[in-house]
Structure formats: C-alpha cells, structure tokens
Figure 1: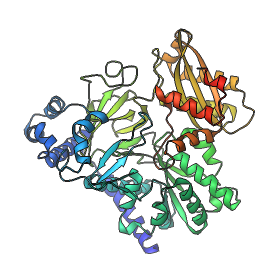
Figure 2: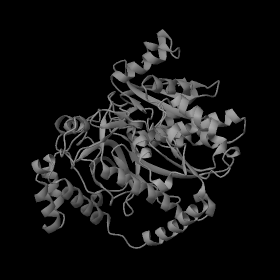
Figure 3: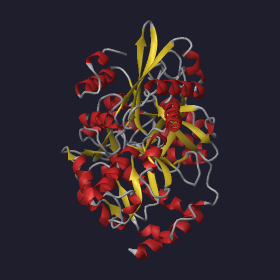
Figure 4: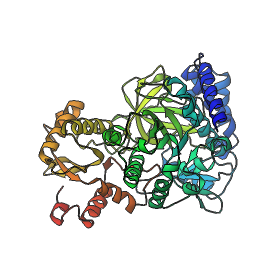
Length: 527
C-alpha cells in the first residue's frame, strides 16, 4: 500500500502541474459539453423529438452564441414531476433509448423531504464514470495543500454514505446515490476505502454506526467524507465508546474532511470540539443528478463548477419574474449560460446531463462568488426560502444568522428549521432550533436572531416593521430533529433536515413533536 500511496502522491503533484496550464474558457468548455451530450442522445426519443441533430449543427457550424438561443427555443424547461411523467417513467419501466441511449440500470432515490415523495433520478454508466472522474480530480486538488505529509495518501478514506445493498426492481436497481457510487469504486482504491464492503452494504443506519464504531480503532483514517450531521454523530459515538477526549485519539492521522449537502457553518463549533487539531475542510457539491462542483484550492470561498464533465449548466435568476412566492417556477423563465451571469446574484440551477436530464430544475439556488473561476456558493433551495410578504429570506441568510447568534451566546446549534405562519391578520416566522445546552433564555435568543436577520437582509428588516409582525422560537434537543428523520426513513446517507417547512409538512412536524412529548397540546395549537 505504501508504494501505491507514493505513486498517488507523485501523480497528484504532476496532475496539478498539468491542471495549472491554461484551460479553455468556461463558455468553450460548456459549449463542448453540450455538443457531446446532444451527439450522444440525438437518436433517443427525446433527441429526435427536440431535433438534437439541428442543435448539434448549430453548435458546430452556426454563429457564436446562436446555438444557445436555439437550444432554449427547442427544449422546454423541466422540473422533476414534468420530466418523470412525460419521459423518465418509461425508462424506469425498463424501456430503452428514452432520454439517454440504452437501458438505465440504476436509479438514485432522493430524500424527497421538500415534497414528501421519493424521486427516482437516473444514474447511467456515463454518469457513474463522470462522478468517478470528478472524484479523482478532487483528490488531485489536494496537491494545492502544501503542508500535507507524503504518507497521508496511504491512509484510509472513510466514506459515510447510504447502503450499497441496492433494491432489485427487476428492470433496475435503486438506492442512495452514495451507495450506488460506493458499489462501483475502482479496484485500485478498495484497499483505502472504509468502512469496507460488508459494513457499507448494511441498510440499518444504527447497526452501521455500531459496526463502524467497533472497528474504528483498527483503521488508520486520513480522510473522511460525508454529510456533517452524520459524521459528527459518528465521531461522538466513537469518542464515547472508547472513552477518549477527541477523534484524534483514535485516528491520529485524520487531516481532511470533505463535506457537502448543507452549509458546514452551523456544525463547525460542535464538530471542532471533537478534534485535537484543525482539519482541512473541502466543500463538495455532489447531488443525485451529478457531481456539480467542489472546492479546488485552499481558502476558496466557493466551489468550482465542473464545466467539462457531462453536465451543461443554465442559470435562472431567482426573482419574482421567474418564481412565485412558493418557489414554483413560472412559465417562460429567463435563462443564462455560465458566461452571462453576474457575481452576487442568486440563480436557480438547470442541468442537462449524461443521465438524460434536459434543462432540469434541480431545486438548488446558487450565487457566483468568482465568475472568472466559475466558483459558486449554494444559497438554498427554490422551495426552502420564506417570502410570505416580501421578506425574501434565504437559507444562506438563515445559516449566517444562526452561526452569528450561536457565537454570541456560546451555543452549539446542529439543526434548525423555520416555518412561515399566519399571525393575527398578518404573518410570522416560527423557528425550531436544536440546542443541547440547558437553561437557554429563549427570549434573548429570539431577539438576537431577529436582529441578525435584519442586518443580513434589508427586505426582512423592512417587513418586520410591516407585515411580518412576530417571530417565535422553540428550543428543542437535537435528538428531536434526528427522530423526525428516522420516522421518515431518512437517517444517514445524503439525507438532510429541511431548513424550511411549508404546507402539510408543518403539521406533520408539529404532530411528531407533540406525539413524542416535545410540544404540549396547548403549544400544538399555537403558530
């Protein structure tokens, strides 16, 4: 293994020398990517209906920029329900050549917390290869971190994801994306991969954590990969089991944490209490629809879009011209290519991919923090923001406010969610905040949170003087949030607790809290 690690280290250094050579512009990378996607899918039923041959000709032989205007006119924008009902359901039933050539053998099941329905996202062979390729690029980017020791590349990679024991549905297999990708890891990487095939196949999340904990002292882990909440939960469990002070007492060579799915900031303070020394944090944007972006260099604020590996990106300005107050996309939205966006503005993502997604609304919102590098930050979800009366409160605002207030009050906030509720004849926000510290002054917490949100968001500050008449705060133990996730069968893997509850999920959440003794009957009736 030492020899392989040494070769990997040399390969990383060489690859970064090559990567630092001048690359094509983001526009050119995206143009080439779209051409490859259209060429591959032109003989599918989708490609024939929407004249992919003509679109490909426009890219190869048309005037500069004309291809994108033609692509927008030819192919409609889809959300999940629309593309599934019109196209993907046929692939799911085993039909070939619908939106991508051949028969699709794997489907990733998304968490579905925003709509309370499981989504089946196709994962083709081409997409699996693209995810592997980008994953290797992410490892190679560690060459930019000069202080890492040579032998780190010989250490274990702990990847905490969904079960690799996929469900066989006759014509296809389905499961968590992390389970699908872990099942297909390259042969050369298997000696480094933890928790290993047997534990990775375990479907029961509690048993999986127990088995990892029992074997943790036998592993020399240098890298951990996963959603912050579940990694933190695992580390707490390991520390308690072995009666040690920090995770470095078990894994002294742990140096890198690649995280994704949610903002890390709400977890940072609680996470770092479990460490003997700082880690290198690498932000990752891997969704069921593809590997979208990752942090490529130390100190980067954002993650660099992967513009040359199987995904064509479009950006819809996240404003009232394109979305209603519930975050639903309006007809005929404005869409832009990567070179047409502006830094600092929020956009909803559209993806066309090598899994047969076409102009597909993924549901995430982003903003560009460095347009030249193509670096983005995730700001939230199209459905997970609040604008009852024009306050336009994003998940990004919520994360920052919680982080600032927890710093001020010395709290460790792992989870939170907020609901928009009627209040008298107007509106209010109701926050549910996970805090394990005792004797919290809820009124102080409420006032500080309100003040920080007003500082971060001018629209919120204005509406607090008008239609947004009140905010309510309920402090809960973090186990209440994890218990709700467990009740939905969404523990572990890529599942995240939703930052905003809307519609019927608000009632479901409050009923769960009441049933499990977190809310009294009288509190259940309050906003």
